[in-house]
Image 1 (cartoon, rainbow, N blue to C red):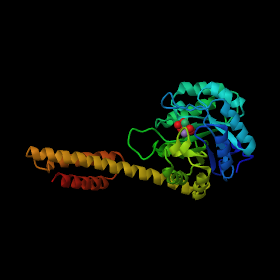
Image 2: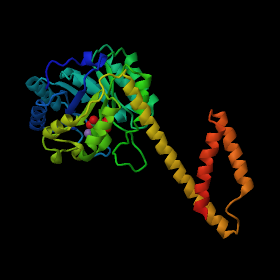
Image 3: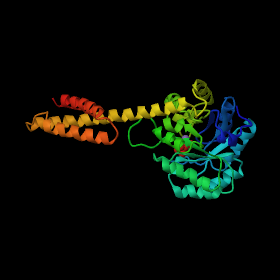
Length: 352
Ligand code: PEP
Ligand code: MN
């Protein structure tokens, strides 16, 4: 339910889950008002988002309705009591958004990668107290994300938040933008005073993944969500596959299991550590699997050249080197020996 929400107080103390929702792009007055009306019935949705200027990958496609949409945002705010939020990428966007009474700004992932653009935005915001959320840059670089936050702070902005929207990746993943949870966790470690919303829409890229991804974010103790919604997602001019109707959003939010209330709790820290362990184990498994692929290639080569599979001298040397290195890294000699004997055993059996 919208109305009387104090975003500045929330940014200082993000005790309850905040949900920002609204269309990827503001397309028409009717589309925005119909979506906003649906959203006004959902508990937790206090902020209406709407893209006015859209950063598109290719030219000659819909790039947002521009300034006129800001007036429709104002209308939605007056009718339903939402705070309104839009993306700004240039000083001109900032000027227009402020002129039309937008309450909260966000800086998009494509802008955050460019320190010159962020610096220009910061300069245009100087002397203003508007809350600004900084999305992660599309590149997985926590320093760049933090740098953008710091540039805004240097311009005197004091009400800042972050939005985790996933990262571009060359590898195949089920996501549109790989979540790489360790990066928002690291931002949280470096700046526990900056609340983080999770933009599950841009992470997932499709409706099917939203539920599980939201729950994962909740288990990692996110401070809230940005979720794109549209009165008729399939007809949306941008990001149709990832937008949900307000009714579907209501169902999604009602399924959230909020396990933890407070980011200082020990349980929260335990979850962070466990996720980190899971991620590292995953990396270990991937590496072992890659190592076995190389073993098979070596096996084939040895067969072709009439060389025996087990080369005892080489194996002894390798094991000694690994044990020495492991001990230097603080591991016990026995543990390193056990691990590499197991790996070697599997490797030999792949070569036979
Ligand atoms: C958006 O929120 O519609 C958007 C363009 O986001 P991002 O900068 O995360 O791609
Ligand atoms: Mn979008």
